[in-house]
Length: 361
Image (tube, rainbow, N blue to C red; front, side):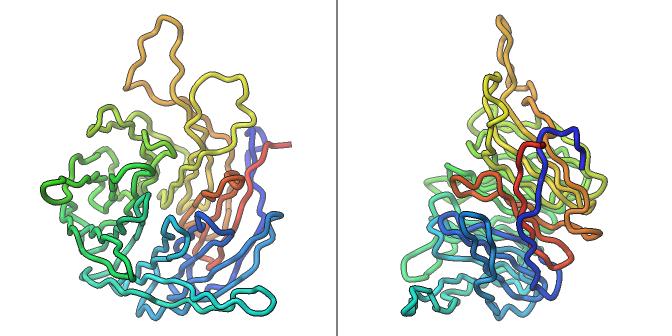
């Protein structure tokens, strides 16, 4: 870790338990719990207290025939979706069964199984209001499912825009815009045509290798992408349906497998110019977790604002060997108010780790 950086990451929890590599982790947006998934086909649920004590709460033997690659909570926090290499998506809810001590002893139940992908499902994500669920696969397709009452799901679109394996899907934080990233080195953005179907309205090209992960900025005016080319690209919305790359971040020595963009805590920024765009976390095959502070570019007096001017940015924290010698597969900021300085990682060691970012001493 670089002692000269203004922030540092401290480990607040190390959560073992998976019997194979841990692929993905998801914080519940409403409740103090998080879920991790693994090549061992299981999902582990952890609870945490206000003073950041974590404990294992539940294990879900999903019944998936292969690796569980991705997990995602619905915005309500009641429902969990799992994406598996068996090509299926599981949708889970916990039966409420509170005992005399007030502890919920209910079991997690699979309320729906979504079939349609031909091969490995790589990612799953709920839209901002929970109306839609998106999934993507090695079969080169992106599916959009409408979430209906009584655990029903209806396929509303099958998008076949990518020429290769689709690695990741992510919804815009406030609009019904879907992004997908692929082995074909591109990112596609989709919207719904009210009179017809969902369609790809733009393709973002620039990475020279697989795009593993994408994350929207908290206010939605930017998109970050992490790639096998070891870079992170920042794309800005310059018109309603037009995006362009305005910044390339370097510093990773191997593939960037995961990016996450949180609102951050700007206690060290008081009195500074520029609109705070949050903290961008990146990680990957080199085992490093890097945190970037991003702001709208400052415009000097008399200067004309330019949409092509890159956002102001600085590396504020860097942690080496987050999972010892192992690759880090995901990094995710906690979305709950008051916990914006928490992030979780998963690694090939099968562990989920929770980190707190704080000003360096």
